[in-house]
Length: 309
Ligand code: AMP
Image (tube, rainbow, N blue to C red; front, side, top):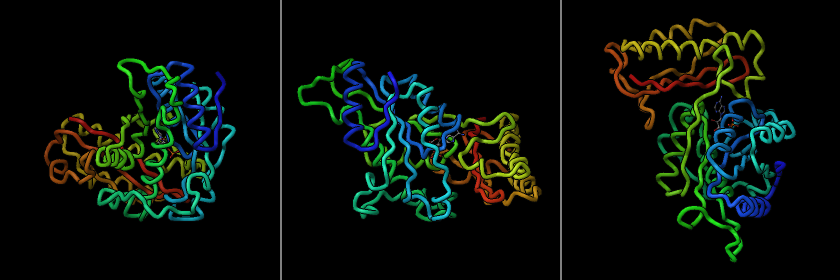
């Protein structure tokens, strides 16, 4: 069936209910995005299609999470290409609401607050970013709830033991702090959805795919490769049970003139607290997450790699 593009919550509810009923679907997946889609998003969509009977992808550039109006204005918008890419992956429904549809009374008064976990790392240089991001993710998780618009007649035939279809939402490991926060929100506020993490998709030379990479010149893109090289180095040290020696990694990144390092550290994957001594001088053991952020020309880049040893 051809992909359907809907722009209102009411249309989404109806279309999702019709599809679930038509397919006798037992599960629905939601893939939230801001558009300007690339192979990273396509991988999220394909994973959702493999695991669910009905898949909704949302495309919404959320003003609430942009501190900088210029960044918001220049965020790439490529709806036709995005819909085509999602159709190729087998997505059923694209939900691309306007700002007025999502925030009909202007900016919402009541919001989700990310708490201390939202104030460190990315939150430190983008105040309010995660409050805005979590607020829209909460709304999108509600919009994408399967069966929300099922007719009272119960035309929908549930699989298994009855009840509503299962609900999963897909997020990239690339945005590790966002992923950790979404997991916390869903746990802390009892959202009835399973969060599925999808590993970071990279280009052949190692650069993590990002909608913002298009703003890099060739020279800046080449320089940006130091981020993934730094993470690879730490990964190799972890695999070899060597000390991770973060200072040497920071020095390596700082030596690249076009790259302005913001942070590099090795942290607990859930709390994002630094794993201090364990990774400096003694061999690394356990679970960790190496995280890095840097400005390269006009773009702020983030990347990370899970460590296990
Ligand atoms: P965005 O449109 O940038 O807000 O991203 C939408 C979703 O795609 C988020 O869950 C991101 O973490 C995920 N994503 C973005 N880039 C990648 C990538 N290179 N690999 C995997 N997932 C990604």
